Image 1 (cartoon, rainbow, N blue to C red):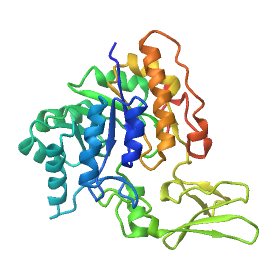
Image 2 (image 1 turned 180 degrees about the vertical axis):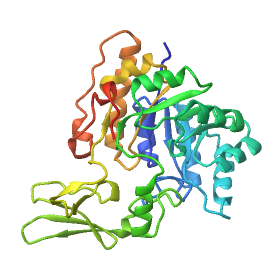
Image 3 (image 1 turned 180 degrees about the horizontal axis):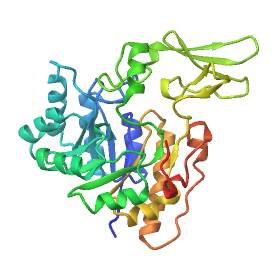
Amino acid sequence: MIKPELICPAGTPAALRSAVDAGADAVYCGYQNATNARNFVGLNFTPEEMEKSIKYAHDGGTKVLITLNTFPPAGNVQLWKDAADLSAKLGADACIVADIAVAAYIQKTNPQMRIHLSVQAAASSPEAIRYYVQEFGVKRIVLPRIMTVSEIRGLVEEIPCEVETFIFGNHGLMVEGRCSLTNYVTGQSTNMDGACSPASCVKYERAEDGSMSTILGDYMIDRFKPDETAGYPTICKGRYKCDARDDGYYAFEEPISLNASTMLPDLINAGVHAFKIEGRQRSRAYVKKVVAAFREAVDSIMAGQEPKLADLVALTEGQKHTEGALKTKKWR
């Protein structure tokens, strides 16, 4: 039985240090530019911060994976090439890429760098994954969140590379039409600029009755009762009205977090090589608590003991989560 790596989020140098100290096998992080799918003000790393952070991680026995997981627009690939070269120079352990041109560049110019295929590439069939492995030397594939345990087990048996799967955090998806709706509303692309619902386009408005409206661009995305916690406005997790019904409803998906903690033994037995925790926009306290809990759980399972997980529901989005759903069916 393979002991899976615990891959943890690091949106800032402080969060990276918290993840390393809490027992992460690897952290994933990005630069302060469009190469990174969490390109928000106040997050991510300058080159100087990345250099110091890589040293801190390596001194603690933790790998650093750089997120180059957006798609270069036509004629503007140099930013991604520069980020790949810098990552190799600083001694990063792998680059997580989505675009085939970026993968090809890394393979040609920095062949010693491991390439991990981002969930953004949306590769979930054996044929697609084998293509990336054969053509670009991909060593690991980050699987879409919609795959069941049985599907993952079958896939592992058919592909010549490692697999990584999400186990906790925001239930976001991949490149798809709803991201284009965000681009229409804000003028910035989730998949090319790395900015889903950029803060400059977000507003909160309090009504006289105490309710709170969240607005993205010129559009109201949701309205919360006075006793509800207002969520961050994203197109895919907003509530909408239509002629067929009077109440606001989640047209795309509910703001529910992934929590696969009870599925860890099944995922390990399925051959998963790495477990990924989402949360680069979360605090260092969140990172510390979640990483420590899953570190203890994985180590207990590998020692043949019953895992003891802390109650992590309070850290999930809207305190709603998908625990157990992976076992029996796909969830969206």
